[in-house]
Length: 121
Image (cartoon, rainbow, N blue to C red; front, top):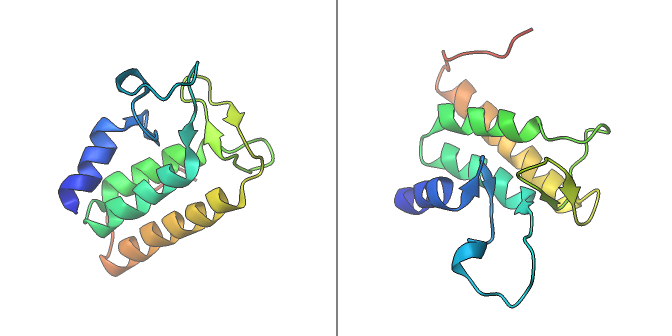
């Protein structure tokens, strides 16, 4: 499982945003590109916690949280190059994954007596 999570994090992301697949390596019959899936990106945060990569998970989660819309909401997808929200907006499934990811990080840090960097006040 650890190898799979790390492979996704290292090979199937653009700036921490999870893609369905590498467009340049797959002929899906569609023109253009698609955005990264925010739900899957937040799932990656949770998976990083589960394999013990708590510091990396926190950094990943903080990066994802920086993509919130002006209303602090998230769409289904995000364009990695522009940060523009794409697809269904707001997307409930993305928000469920966000809550789950944040709770994973909080619980991991509380349970481990986290002594790493804290966000600026």
